[in-house]
Image (cartoon, rainbow, N blue to C red; front, top):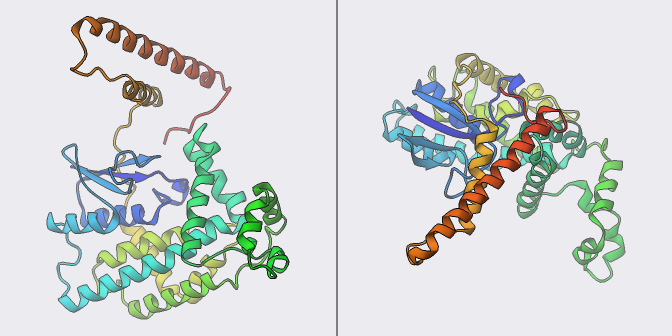
Length: 350
């Protein structure tokens, strides 16, 4: 049996089992292939040596991570949705795959993280509830920062980057230096004042519309992109479009583009959604045992018992390690007490 480690989902009420399109794509591929697998929702990338999710294991051994690598691995294992495609169709599928990854992910990240009303009123609260305390204090903001950095490197910025400081710095051409001196709290507040601003004309949406137009022309009136049976491309497109179509956001510009202009793509997603079931979730350890394991590994990393130490030092070292574990255990027992008494709350079990 395969175990798929995937980012957890804040949209389970929408029957989406990750907030990451690559993870949803692999989940969909496994479902359409009827693979014997279980889902392991996670809140970190520690399972993957290259910090990449999704990651898939077989017989407790990590075999691949990343959307493309996992799909190619599954094909070699005999789970090939593209087996009936000829070489030309497989080349087309790979080309559309790259197009979706390059175009739709940018517009999705922009809509979620750079449109301030969406992030403040929908995305951040859902992510905070999913991660739970104390991760909710910083993980959503970190995800936002990563999204902003990716988009910035691709030349995509929000309206906050075009504030009036540009006019004040045109004389010396040093806009970035001035921005670095402006307190971040001011920038966030300024964006908050404009949170209802209309960003529907942003170029990132035009880029997404071009991608969607090509996909719609390819699909036409067919059930799936290459005929009557789903392929890898169908799974990947569903992985991205489902996160656009089904969640509700205060500013649904991207969703409106899809639903109003490309109904055949919406019908494709609805068709696939009807075919897939709720994934079986692998049994998870309790939060307390996970916390103890993390603490034990953390302390052990600072107190290794190497073979080069003299035997006379080993009893003291072992006693120190044991005392440290006891302290860690007591700390988490105390944490459990305050959780039990509703001082803080943890994510509700699924």
